Image: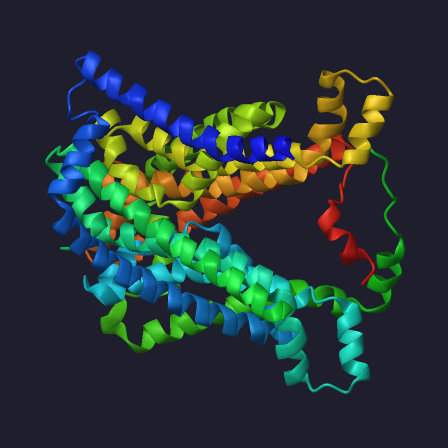
Length: 254
Length: 283
């Protein structure tokens, strides 16, 4: 009993201790040597910048967060619908699936400038681009989840004369939920990444823009502060999906 | 001791292929027809709207530009390929070594694995400008950024794969008094091959993404730079030509990793079936 308690403490304490030691080493390295702040600001300098610029950074985070959320929502809905459609028709699946896999492998990131040319430099271009990036993980993992339903459960459905609609919602979807949420978790990171890349290319606001413009004038501490806010945003979205996953799992298990 | 034994492949498919050619060809023909149809529709739409060629150039225009500007594009292709492959190779070495170290020492794993996972979740792409501050606008910064992006997926997949050896295989090793070194190479590593290669595949796509974003931000050379430059000049045909080369590059480097995976599996006498996929067989 005491052994498992010790393990539990270690599994939390060790990573935290590592982070603290690394931050301390970083601080010591910066204050003891003459590394210029442009190259590597001390953690304390970053925290100071974060405090000083918090209102503007939060405003930028709101813009980025809104766009990432919109892109994520679009991607999840579209990904689920296409996955459901492709799982219900073998013809459709065989036709589009290889193309989707190929699209998953090619660097879609390179399409970002094209979206700006076609859709302009407003939010729509960034949302559409980020939605495209985060669409594929949801689609692929949901489709694999829907097609891997336990065959015994499907046989039971048939013997109970369940309609295709009924067996889809009450058997296939619950079985596919873990896959669906796995895809959603990856998608949530891709949505934030997509918006940031698009902001690098075209934006007058948002965290990606804040990072790029601060780095252009070598305000490295501000760059780090903006990255910290962005990481918090990304973790927040990921955490929300993970929390939703737990809720859904509990709900479906009854 | 040898690698875990395997079942032989069934001889069934041959008879099926002879009897039902359409069923066998369908999975190949349908997607090809679909892609050909998409390209044809694209060509027709572009032909019907000649004024829209600034944003959506026809496939025929793209091929024309590709033919004409190939000598111009090839150095950029080479730069992108070089930085991506070098970044990936370094990330693979560093990631697999660190992943193996984490799998070997439990305390180190407890201390570092949460950080690896955390880094996989946060949008690392935002660090691209920092790499330019640190390493300049040259190829080194893009190479290192590609390495940085690819590293985390490879390291955590290696750790996960090496830590997930089947306990009965390890017990067998212990009862045969295999040394830790023997256990690692004869059992842990072969069992981890699928997971390690899953990490390598993801790392390869991440390395290419990292290099492209680095090219966007530093704007010196490479296909990412050409895409951005051409898109800014509303030269859609050149944009699509560069994108086509990028897709070809992406599929090629990914294909090389897949080939390496097949070679590794053959070397170890695979295909290894991991626990999670056993259900699939009885379908």
